Image (tube, rainbow, N blue to C red; front, side, top):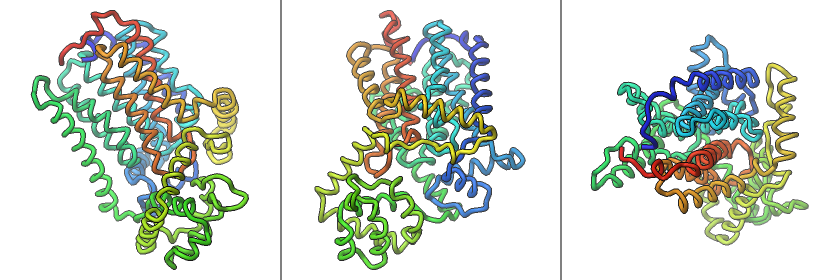
Length: 460
């Protein structure tokens, strides 16, 4: 158990009021939801005007389609869902914070996380990354809640225990690489529900964790099959980027299969070997070329591309590893030219004034003065320091396992982008920002100041 308690925290109505005010303000700021090119394409699929494809998450299109139907054609339902996930998760964590500290200020500090510039920059954009982050936040908060005795009604505990894995599965359905971030949370969920005392308990917890993960991936595949979605994949982009970063265009011209040769040569102009280019090609730099090379997603061409990628990597393993390391270092330690934000001219809100204020706060103020909070290295460093501190000083704390799980999930989320040639984008760090920040608040306000009697673990 995190703590033996009672239901007193749910009688603190000011907590609920604070969460509702935050929810209302967020919806007012972002309505009907900030949209980029990816969002518009996803909406086209949700309304049935475009064919479903596996490049964008089918689950998100189906959820959005259902919300549009329920709301009588209004397409702002995804924003409402996203904000409900976010503020519900923050509300539960704030209630748990108040239950442990009895401090109004410390509980409100949890809500304040939603208005950190790097978080606010992403929270209102209708992206799969934001959906994933908010779903994981709510799932994590509910798992923490299940480890307390604040919820006494059996029907409510069963309801929470049912909703939580659905949120985790939804997160994986949004981003396949989310499996890395979800696995620790699945472990905590299984550890919370399975009975204590069994000699094989660790094996059972691991089995349930892996089972849910595999089941989630199978579910994602079945969604594509059942909806007859067009088979497209971002991995095709990664294969092509790897190739143009490993070998120059003249070698591609000599060695590539005929049906992919010209396509690769045309996009190699953004690669490491193009002059005067001196850095590795990334999706942002090559996106124009990829948009014009839809033939990469033809099944036969895709097989040829994968075969050629295998040949190139086997012939140049050192180059392959070097460009992967360099690309990931660019992701961890970006320079200003590599940072990507929701562009002011691309995201359309109802109020132009509100849109301008948001951009000024999150980018012109936040990024200009606190650039480090937009960088992956910062969240990895904070997570590592926090994990080392709580392990060395407070390993007996009842909060040790939940906090370590959150920190592990945060770091694994960032690590999961290592295989891809991508740019640093605040959207990719959204879950890590939330998970690490929540963990730091609980370590600083609760664990660090807890008396020894509270730090001793209790069975559950």
